[in-house]
Length: 543
Image (cartoon, rainbow, N blue to C red; front, side, top):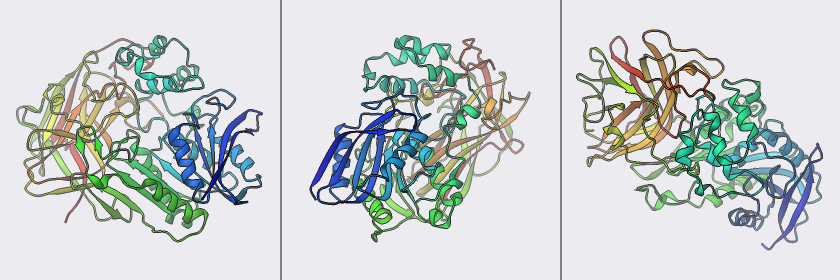
């Protein structure tokens, strides 16, 4: 189908600011369903143009728009704070255009996904469905640390001004280590007022409520296709959104028409069969555009298309599987308990994951914020981590390593992963990190998923509660995985107190997280045994 393009359309917002967009549409068709795509990354980039041409050649109109303050659009760019209302105004304008048949769908990834949700909760006219790809969560969900993470500053630099900046020229390693955290922006040579304002709000308060959506699924009544990857550094948002809509959206129609697709991908989904050192095979890359097209045909053109609930790629096995829910009803919760006799410090210790509780003991390590445990990643936030080999990191004595025996048969883990820990620290506030890895026979310790808890927020992000004297309980959400541990491999859990620079360093002083630079070295303990049954919680599908 031939397409035509109308460029540089000025779209008025209710406050007088004009956004600028391009309309791609099928030639000779007077009315059509309209797909809206909004981006802070310049609407006229090659990939965005190709997507718009694909959908419009299949009968849809596509309105591709620069968000406020970026590209050709007027106004100031303040991430997320204007996007809900702007999206509402945009759709109210769009449904009145003579070419729109009254049916609107939205699509996009990352920033372009989260702003779909911020608009959808306002119930804009015409919105019938969304495709949400690698959507960020509400504040403090991905990073429950009370402040914006160091690596996020590389993204802030990328989108500063109206056009994308080259963030590869900056010495990010130096900036990430700068203290206090509020001073990191000084080396960038310009001010970011909303970054500094956000640092003042270190609990979830009304400031963050303005850009939150994951407590509002009950307001929504639309089908959503949720897409992410196991190594997407914002993976958790997709699972929260799918489960939240399936269980809590406004109507049975909405609850029954949610689908989720998870591949062996990073934040840029479906890019390559390889990620880091691993090749996930020829089936790992799919015709994702066709999946998205079929979704829009079903819900905007009322065509019959293949329907499924959950489609996920099982790593290790390297094949796709279908399930009816998340977590899969076929999976059963299973616990492996932490234990050691001499000490679990480093992979050369005797830390073990076992089926049974053994004795009462603890493992102890020193956490020095000047020498944080590294998280393996590139310098910028485009992709944070992957299926990396953590065996070199596991040589450190400030990493507690708990490993199962060699597996006698394949073990398929599909679902959320958690660590329940009984902890103690000489500090009033410190962090605990947990990482699940697959240890291959050659010693390669493949990262699968991880998570963290900042102890002052262990009972929620809405208040600060410093550690009690003695033993405290913490639960670490390690997100989700779908992975087959092969026979002869081992299951491993690493515990430490920093994954830097993925997360900001806790200085252990209990002071202001953004403006303090006083470092305290902490002694941290993990208790285990019958009295304090620290454990790794998995969901296993038995064949």
